[in-house]
Image 1 (cartoon, rainbow, N blue to C red):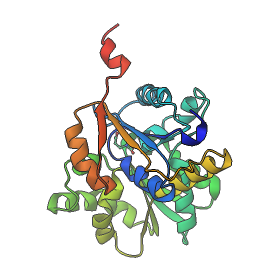
Image 2: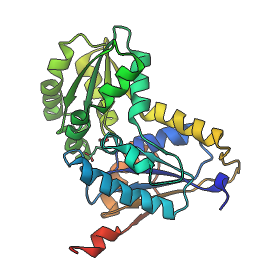
Image 3: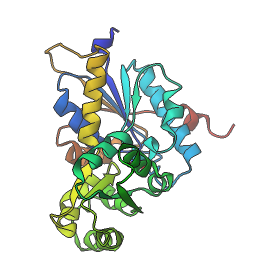
Image 4: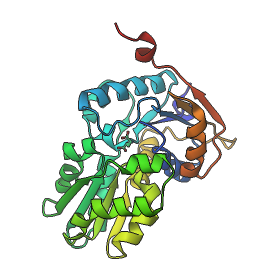
Amino acid sequence: MEKQNAPIGIFDSGLGGLTVVKEVLKQLPNENIIYIGDTARVPYGNKSPETVIRFTTECVNVLKEQNVKMVVIACNTASSSGIEQIQDQFDFPVVGVVKPGALAAYKSTKKQKVGVIGTERTIKSGSYERAIKALNPDIEVWSKACPLFVPLVEEGWFDNDITRRIIRVYLSELMGKGIDTLVLGCTHYPLLKNTIKDIVGNDIRLVDSAEETAMVVKDIVRHHQMERHKNDNPEHQFFVTDAPEKFVELGEIFLQHKIKHISKIELESEIGGIK
Ligand code: DGL
């Protein structure tokens, strides 16, 4: 298949990466998309970097078999766990979400004080802090892991008493640091955006990497002259590693779009069992 018509592959540990799909579709509406969500093994956020890299590589291999022209690692945890090792294994562009998210924070902060929230693994890796400081070493960065946010979102609890209390507990320390920008460094957190905004107030801007990442994707596609020019309806195909029902139910809220073509796949390591 010539590169122009090849799909863009987008990977996440689950369904949160659909927030990135949504932005890519907004900026590149003609593109075919193939998404893989490793729903059988989500969450990645509390796993070791070695495991995250292994799982991610398997999923990117599935996208490779689908002849994608490039891959977006929409998962912040995977993007923070040695993405260079993954990029080295493939001969098409592989982009993560941390650098674009850091760029969004750099553009947003006026006081040079930024907070970052993410999964345990993302925060432990220090990936956002490094990427923000690479843009401006004078920016002060405070980070906080918020491991309960992912299950709350997976449960569809975007705004209720429990969610609000948990948000307050996690964010009170960061709010005391005088930050003016908070990076939502996890695919799931944009779904809590309104509730977080209500709690932290208007003086703190919330940034997520989805929009900046979509711009990077657009640049790469244009730079490599891989844009799809056909005007027929593009195809969007979704693969998951566990039952599709819940993915479709919540995924349509994430994507704000119907999910029509979805199938469950078996990853080789899962079929193989203990060797
Ligand atoms: N996709 C993950 C991330 O953005 C969140 C879910 C998980 O822990 O796997 O960090």
